[in-house]
Image (cartoon, rainbow, N blue to C red):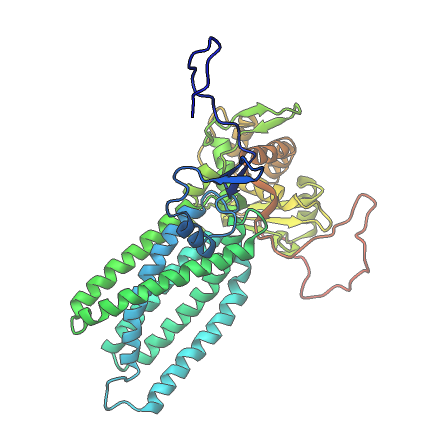
Length: 494
């Protein structure tokens, strides 16, 4: 074939091939290109490097990864799943060793053991587990969504504790049934907490309303890892037979790796929904300069003020994994009236110092702040109220820096809080904070949205109590209830 001639009749440079008629992509990866051939048909051209292992990788991706990966999942999906697979492998290997110990504890291999005794031990173990499962779901079911990271770690710690109890059971025959019952109770808590938090994380990872697909593929990955763990256990168990010290050394190594992998997996998550620890860190970063841009106010395109707030990538690695850690006050969001005030005078004072959507009562000497949410308030009222309550908590901490948003007005409030007599409610501070929050609050919410936080949906876990107090016309709607002598508001001792 002759090369094309140049303008002067000589040989010119080769011409570039015409652009393809169509490109074929699998997700974000190019799989083929189509051009018209000499007979008017379509010629399929595979780019270099797309053929090698493409069929095998595509099949593995379809089996183990959600459809549309990586665009269909969150950016932290791969890192989290890798660490989660490692912790699942360690848990499977330790569980195989614990299963052998459980069989020894119920009498397998012991000529003196009876079938009835083994059956009673197993029934006791299952019965305690059933009761524990129902009780735990009743007590903590509403907190699992809001504290998914914390309960995920707690579930893994409890799982390791249960495995250790099962490994100890053969060494104490008389205490064996009790140890197995405790282990069963811990494993049932693990089942409830682990399953619920796994579902909450699947909601975060899904980006195309594909929660079911993400959860199903997570189950496939876990099944594959557990199968690999069982194969390794078939090799490991005979090697550890009759070597208790070596067994405990291997168990210690597996448990340490299990916890370390869990910490790394949770550290990889970048949850954009606000729970109380993340809201506390975001507010503290905005007030104390924890954001990358200094936490000072910046102009918004609409002309409104915006407080620069640290985003999910900055806050999530600092989120405490122990519930209640780094808190100065116990916050009751959505508290009933009898928990907030103790007299009519206090109630009227709370209305004067609060807002039209919620009231706040701060008791610094008790380390408690309560928020009463008004019935019919806007959907963002719990977020605004919780942020203001956390602002009062920040005022109880170290002095705010000079560049803090509203610092000129907030620093005097800090001094007034420190001079608050024990047992009293600083109504003046609460009223001034409500006045300031009418300006700072909307700016803070705009800053949250600008930083990438989801402000339309939150995980602040407000209680179900709502208040319906009298409006300006006087009198709350509804039938007049009969007074109960056991539920009267009594004068406060404060």
